[in-house]
Amino acid sequence: MDRHFQRELESLKTTLIKMASIVEENFALALRAVNEKNTELTERVIETDKRIDQLEIEIDDAIIDLLALQQPVASDLRFILAALKINNDLERIGDHAVNIAEATDVLINYPDAIILEEIPQMANIARAMLKDALDSFIQEDPVKARAVLTRDDQIDDLNRQVARKIIENVKCDTKLAELELELARVSRNLERVADLTTNIAEEVIFYIQARIVKHHAEEKKTD
Amino acid sequence: MSKPAIETRYLNLFYDTFHALEDISISIEERKITALIGPSGCGKSTLVRVFNRMNDLIEGVHITGQVLVEGEDIYAPNIDLIELRRKVGMVFQRPNPFPLSIRKNITFGLEIHNTTRKTDYSGIIEESLRSVLLWDDLKDKLDRSALELSLEQQQRLCIARVIAMKPKIILMDEPCSALDPIATSRIEELMQELQKEYTIVIVTHNMQQAARVSDYTAFLYLGKLIEYGETKRLFSAPREKQTEDYITGRFG
Image 1: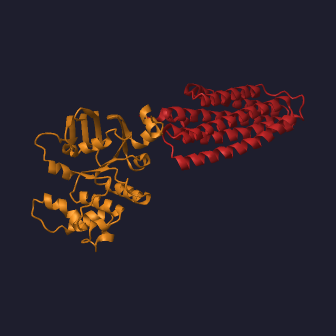
Image 2 (image 1 turned 60 degrees about the vertical axis):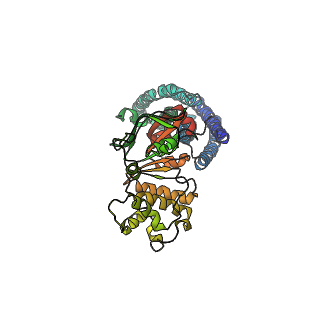
Image 3 (image 1 turned 120 degrees about the vertical axis):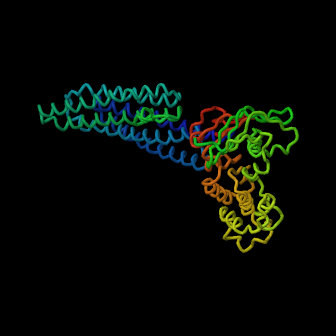
């Protein structure tokens, strides 16, 4: 038994979980910033994202070393490949959190504006999806990961509803165009977070069950 | 799978009372490279030696079940052992050329098997040495002693010696374990070339080698065939926990 290699794998998992929890918190903070129209919180989101970027590089480096030096196979290989992709997905979720938080710069100019109800709904679903995807990774639970995949459609539907309402709102009152465009951007960023979260869940299934489920590959496979 | 080159059915092998192979049923595809892996004492070398009845030379060996080579039961009473070993050649761990000239190493088996009183072997010598990529280096040195060659060249010569017999199957028992990494990678490349014409079964301790060179991998443990399948599947998503534990180094 190669104890050194096992320790390296454990350490990779621990760092990735650390990265995941920072991303999850920063995403929640970004949503709070928008909800409270609080630019101070936005600053904190931007600051924390730097730490996320740094961690992404650290994790990539650790993965390169493991691949180059240990030639992993079987579940070790699948774990490392999944970690590589999850790392990238998390970093991008971090970027979307920044985009969402930056909406406060516009929103503070419209203190009385009512935000479309679908946006907090999307935010809640995306947050829950992210939490479950990360839990499925930590607990190595493919059932939980599969449950995440089924929820992405809800976000897509809400995103389309938001787009329709925004068009209507702008038609009624062109003075609100800037605000509405910003809300459209938030909605699109939330939709992207849900997509990336789905990717994470797919990677968890690949790692644990050795099954490729993205792009409906499982249904297409004939054997 | 197309038609199997080798097939065993419920093969059991005992060294006196020691049960070395238990109920092995395996079908080895022709013109593919099949790797046998597993920890020391798992039975992989014993199994490969069943395929050309090398185990007959060991006292106390007893076999039950069937072993078919190209559909023929090689443990049937009327089997021609010399013909079997011509058809199923073997390359060993340490290069073992005869202490004779390079030329004689190639022709030795041919002369023993010769039924046509043929004496001009120059065509076969060239062909065999070309197929192991030694011809250009050695064509002017055929009368030199084979023992003057480097280890890698000696191992190539041993493979050429097998090829000269026009076998169908080449068994390789740890063929690279005495070689350095560069020589190893050249022999591995050679195996890929040879696979176009021959069925190759390789026993290896080196899992990376099994993963690199073979089309199919069989994992044996304590005399049992634990898992057998396409190499790329077995090394990315093994079905059995014992295979997973062995190939990831978590064994024992």
